[in-house]
Amino acid sequence: MSGDAPASSGPPALAGRPAVSRGLVTFGESMGLISTPDIGPIEFAREFRYGIGGAESNVAIGAARLGASVTWIGRLGCDATGDLVERRLRAEGVRVHAIREGGFTGLMVRHQRVAGHVSVDYHRAGSAAARLCSGDIPDDVLAGAAILHVTGITPALSESACQAVFDAADRARGLGLTICLDVNYRAKLWEPAAAGPVLRALAARADILLAGPGEARLLLVDEQAGVGPAMLTHLAALGPHEVIVKDGARGCAALIEGASFTLPALPVPVVDPVGAGDAFAAGYLAGWLAGESAGGRLHTAVTAGAFAVAVPGHCEGLPRRHDLAALGTHPEDAVR
Image 1: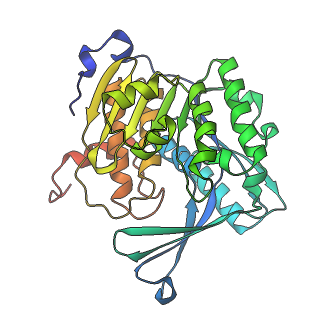
Image 2 (image 1 turned 30 degrees about the vertical axis):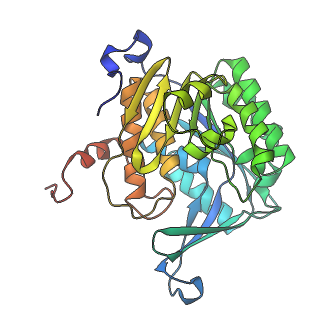
């Protein structure tokens, strides 16, 4: 691992701190995931798999596997998919605060029309998750946490869900929580002109900001800006004091409490790119809660992202603590 400023030589705030006993709380939409391993038109697929997906639940599972205390909140339908989501999260050690209702749990259908290009169709309009509201996020759950993690997906679902995100962020701020925003812009949910002002207002409330290069440009209203010190500085000027730009196979760049870092991605075969950003977020937040230095938690984040892309599925390949060292070996090595 290398960085522009080694973790050991940074200011005291970056050199590591005691582990935080309180954990992570997140909320949002979790869905059923129908996928096919075949490449080609979906009408010729002969096999389908059924699992779960959703940015916040992916982060919840990833952070829990890395040892963090995690609570996930969301609305689920009283249906088999809702049952599956709740069972899967509980099985991963996530505390679940699920509001079950008469609506349906949303679905994703994903396939590869051609190799390397993943397409996802959503069936979510009118789903239970779209009725998420401020009252669904209890004060006592927030009060027992150290970090509130939100994404830019939830405010795009409905007016009540948008209000829930802002209200939870404001309450979390009053309770002294650290607020993390992963921009997670979804073009199928809203246009940039509608998303930009909302996401900038959320970024102003955040302590930790995670974004891809395109999402960073959306926040900065600058389509030409490249990933670099200027972009990070401008993002930090929005309010967050920890800014990380996730750049896929090019690794990541960060400005954390005034110190700059760049880390390359780990070289792994990319089997499935979906969920890499959620894995990165889970790794970073789990490292934050474990008291890792800034460089250490960035390394954990990059490693978690590598595990995610090397395994099919949204959350199936997320690592546990003992897995993290495995990617330090050569691909041809056998662990015996």
